[in-house]
Length: 159
Image (cartoon, rainbow, N blue to C red):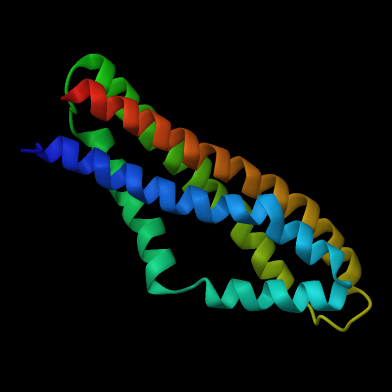
């Protein structure tokens, strides 16, 4: 039977994997695909994505994983090595995935939402957005997936 601590780690691991994997596809091919479109089409597509992503399945998983990470930081998980790994996973998710999203990607999304896709001035915003947003996204992807690894190893050592 799983302990409460193991259940928390499994839930955080799954949440980090879902979010990290979802973010991975953006850095891997979605942003490259959007950059191949004309600026107006790329902007319009990303503006639509940024509206649709605000849904229960994504936002619920995104915030629930952050809450689980805080809980993991507050509870002793097991031995000191398991605790260190679980805490590492929690910090990677909270700082590298959650905080980078809130402080980096969301403000860029808001800037993009404020432009008209057909306005000539939006081209500079789009070009800046593609570079900065993708760089930040790659960072939050890596942190989310490294959190998965940390949680997985913590789970095997906490048993």
